[in-house]
Image (cartoon, rainbow, N blue to C red; front, side, top):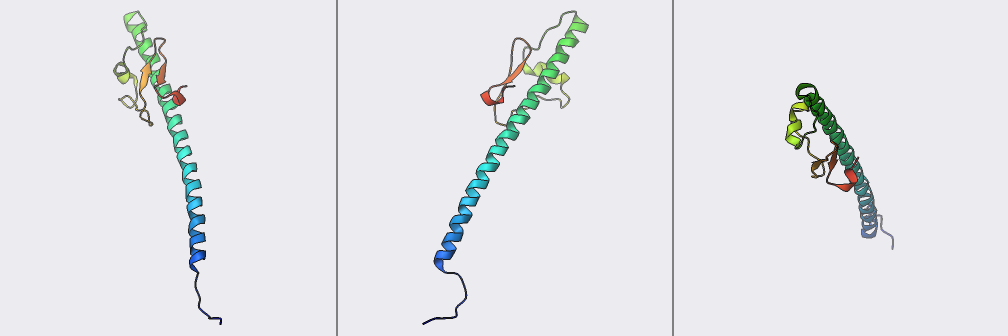
Length: 112
């Protein structure tokens, strides 16, 4: 006994939903890894900007005070930063000043 009903069976709908679920899982993991790469690049860019401000700080003190010295805290770099504030690490890390004037992030994968 054949019927002429149109439509999908329950099994066909379940199979399509499973395939869509797998595709969503693959795509979301791909985009989350891209987001982390973007955060790392932004953090390294912030570190470069802070190091440039550190060099300007050193030069300012060398020319005006006859002794070049690096900033001892990040807030001392604010006058030498274009944005007028210390940038934040996009992954919630913190920036650290080293004795040689270098800047690094507290997150290991963000180090330059």
